[in-house]
Length: 486
Ligand code: C2O
Ligand code: CU
Image (cartoon, rainbow, N blue to C red; front, side):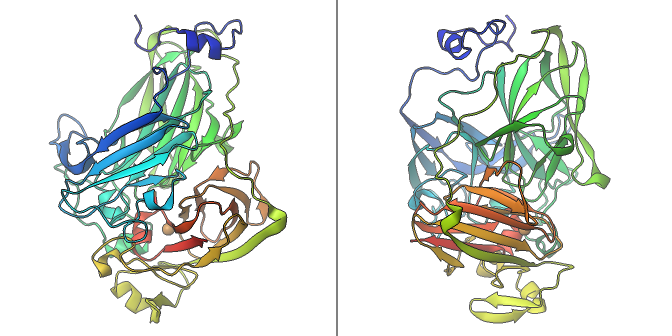
């Protein structure tokens, strides 16, 4: 039996809609009947994994349950999740459920939504999986080091009616700065990284390993979920002669489309779901490359075609995903706010407010800070020696519960910034004044240097929510704030 083909079941026949020619297709993933409550455990702690190749020693990492990425948590939309996190690190931690719209107390931000989880302590998170899609989880405590040492994992919420594919794959992309003995370089928080483009590594992994080949089969249709769990690396993936179709961004359904220039751009924390028809022939090899930084393009891995063929031409079943129950912004009655991003090298920021005091750029840098949102620099993981939200952060803006909030963001720096809002999903309305084609729902939006981006969301989840850059060094060095929904 070919391991790539799942057995045909009654459920898959129903989902295939009985259309002719698709009888050999099955939806993925298949799972047993309703589990309405899913209880999981996670234990972050040190571990050793083989990341590079058998010729290299193992790498000491910080990992959930000893694995990088952490165990894939997979539930169905509407399920209630209960996740008991036991801290086996020698420092405090939390878990943030990136992109999931959870109650504030379950959001995993130290000192803002909860007391951090001390070593040996257990904290149980509990929330409903309201939205279907591809999400992920990671600590929010000293994120730049905890995430960067390996604490991150995928959380997948299956649609009630998923698209029909042969296989459902998830690639969690990681980026590591390894030394020659495959150990992680200890220079977390280096000012050079903090004040420039963040900690870029020298080793890119897929699901925790440097991969040479992913086996595929001629004619099969794959749903590929991409998760960028890197601290700072932006990916720009090309699948050569394949024509991937984007069906979801940050977990949320988008009108199925081929990406601009055939390149899938994925900033830190972003997810993209693709449908890829394996249009090659048995025996083919296709190299997937990443050329986001054009002068540093590299081969990520190969798609290696096996000897046989699943079907002759791609299936013509629809690939549009159902929409999630996100409230539609009312732009005619919106509260409008402006947010500016400043700082970094080659920028024009002269200084910023730190703890209520105006601080010039040189002093800022000396304190391990480099960035500001609306002129305020918060965070300073190094300076405060503690959590990413180690001191009280006054909200940069307050939105009345239930109101539509439009935020016009202006990146006044020479660096790209993927800006992430907790607790909500926003529509990306425009870029540099031009309406976006799909008004995508996202939780993290990449702003190019000097770019202006407008987002809109209904502030329907009460609480103080983090709003920060997901280049984790930028976050730690000041590009972090909160938005209050009250
Ligand atoms: Cu992925 Cu504030 O987090
Ligand atoms: Cu940034």
